[in-house]
Length: 384
Image (spheres, rainbow, N blue to C red):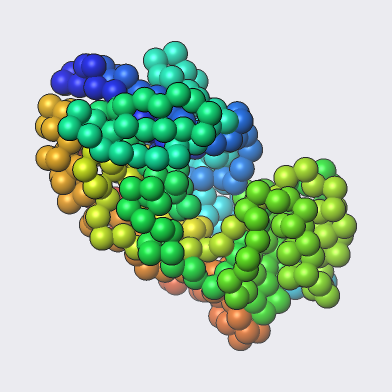
């Protein structure tokens, strides 16, 4: 492995998946990496994420984590679409939603953190407040920490990226709302058979699946709410799911006692460039499409390409960022289209039946699998 990046100081914002993956790859090349994360600690739990195809396997192998990811994999879960009486009307195979390897997001985040904690600096419970480019780097101020200057800054902080807002402009300029919201809740309750999903027009509730104990998707106008107010999230879900059949009343009863609720919009990032000066975006901050099914794979491949191009360019960030963008633009095009909302929460009874029917017809399912495999492998990886 080439080692051209000694004494390069890199600040990464975000300690979920893309940030620690990049930290791992840069630290191996001699960089001094600091990861800042707004949350007070590593975020455990969370929905299942997946990898599929040769490209993802190659990146995991070259990162040296494939065996550990396999050890932690969940095995995938079939999703049973049920009617109001609980009768299964269609089955979405685990291989469709879970790829070749499915792993809990929290387990993957911890694995990457453990691989980097000894070689990288982690600052939890803090956030960037300003970015000022100077001839010698980027001067960064924080909510709590003292100001520092870094050679490069990477925004790997999700679809609501703070780095993107500070370096590129307001979120409203780059993030399109797709007309749906989703929520993930870990509930201390048993709702019977795992992997069941129930729909009424514009609403879906699932229990015991790979995402969380309870998983919600619903159509809505844009909502004005505090992204960090759990009680407000519970009230929004209670209103959105009032009167819904099946086991939904039981789920809403259990929801009242939940300690955490993750509620967010289904949104898609549309940005005309991934970098500005010494600042670059990675993962959902650059090419996010909520619940699109490719986010984690895109983040890891993006981290691999970005780290590799920085090494290949000997630290010349202008050349590296340009080549990173050239490669990832084509690969990330899957995130430019598609909206999981109408698939998970179809708007009419006829559309619910049509969605279910696609999983009953063998050739349609095989076609969908073939398309997802094509998207996952649609890049020629360099061996850096």
